[in-house]
Image (cartoon, helix red, strand yellow):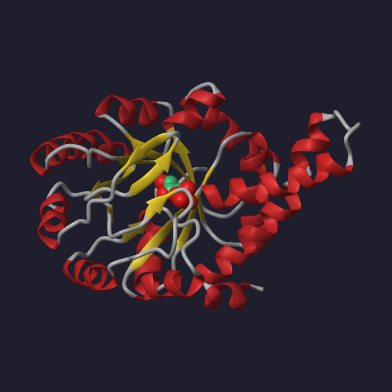
Length: 285
Ligand code: 13P
């Protein structure tokens, strides 16, 4: 059964670790992530962007795919199926109606009042159905699904305002970017800490790819409870598949080609989760 992210994120916030949000793109990625997280016996959030939804056919297909894998693979860990960067109320509603257990409404491109209005609308639709809601203030920079945006840092005042909509988690943009960083990331840890101390809800770090592990640990100590990873798994998978194709030019079976990235992806998932949550991992093993 799919769950919303409330319990897993509240636990993470209380005990100062982070839950991974891994973006999924297809059957194989979903399977590898579920299998590895089950092996580690830790909860996971599967993020689906609007681009990935379109690629896979639609929200309904994605929900059935995830539920089917949970059943067939005997997955018993908590799994949250989450719309990543929902761009409108309609998109969030469509995901909720298709059975997603969580949504992000990203109205950060609008002014704060409009952001609050759209976010409230989503919360009012989601909460009676038990669906959790994440919102964003400021703007995470970089490129996602081929859309580029600049960084606008969130202020404490904006965070306090958006939290009045009753959201369950907040992604305050504090210098991280989607995709690969040019140079070292410049995260505003002071403000992260300040926002965490002022708000009871868990905080989310977008653009987790390429942030050095010591900075990830610092972000967790400043109150980050959910870390979004997309590009890192793409690059890891791609490197392994390119190597396989170069060494096996005559292999055309798609199952062999696609799954040549499985081992590397699973190793990367374990490595990241160990950084996000070293204590819990050692106690579970
Ligand atoms: P990266 O692609 O930089 O890992 O960012 C993922 C993300 O924030 C998804 O919302």
